[in-house]
Image (tube, rainbow, N blue to C red; front, side):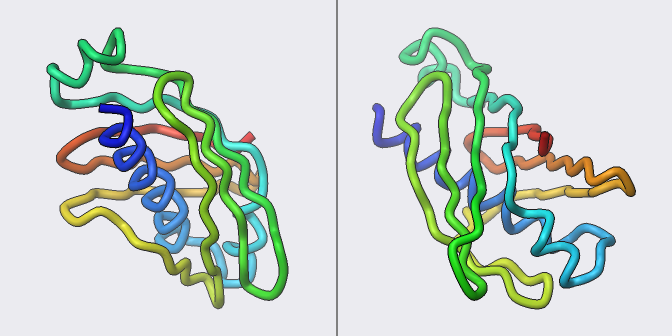
Length: 131
C-alpha cells in the first residue's frame, strides 16, 4: 500500500509544479517563483486507502530548490506515506515533468508572491500554498 500512496504523492508534486505554468505571471517570473517552501493538504479519494493510512486527509510539505540551468529539485514530505525527491525543468514558464492523466490543476500567484495550487486527479486532491 505504501507504494500506491508514494505514486499518488509523486503525481501530486508533479501536478503542482506543472500547474505553475498556468498562472498569469510572465514566463521568467513564473520559474523564479517555483523555489521555496510549499504546505497544504492532500485527500485520498478511495476509502479503502484511507483506512490503511488512518484517515483520508493529511498534511503535506514540499521544498523546491534551484539546482542549475533550468533544473529544480522538489523534496516531498507527506505527514503520512512515503516522501520523495524529484527533478523538474522550467524554461520560459513551461515546467516539464510527468503528470498523472485525468488531472485538474488550478494555480495562481498574487502580486505579493503568494502562490496557490489546487490539484485533483482520480485518486487524490490537494491544496497547497507557497510560504
